[in-house]
View 1 (cartoon, rainbow, N blue to C red):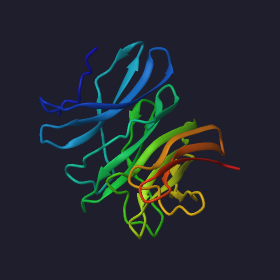
View 2: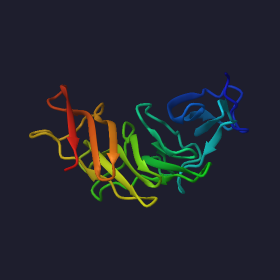
View 3: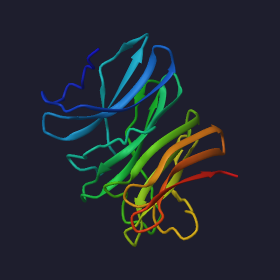
Length: 222
């Protein structure tokens, strides 16, 4: 079935759907990106109810986003729906300074709220072109975790975990990599995250072990 796009979609909208989450048969949410009539690359979300897909809606990026925020979703597990009409998603966008930043966006009772910027550690430069939020897992509405990547002060990509508690997304926490590793590299980071209960999460991903050698890693809360 063709997806009905937001009213400001370009005739050649270049739609890309990245991820889908379902709470029960016939009730799902999809996220992705599309081009507006002005040529801006924006995020979208579409909901399925009773087996029928509703018209997609435009996702509003954080305050200070560029006119063309260049919204991007990685397509691993970047949307999670702990409730029938409550979801959380994350991705990457460009701010007014031209820097790439991560973002989180929540749907509450069927309405998508404005996105919030991923709060990075104080020594970071920005999320980077290959950073931002990659995966999201939720225990309950307003209590989620996200896997992300960012550029540190030395220009190295680092992996991080971000927690949402009571509907508020906290600052990112850098993941300690295996001994001797200094970066997850441009192609590494957290690609899978699952949190079966509150405070218990397991993440998997890859990191830069040598000059051009990547290895996998897994990390769990204690």
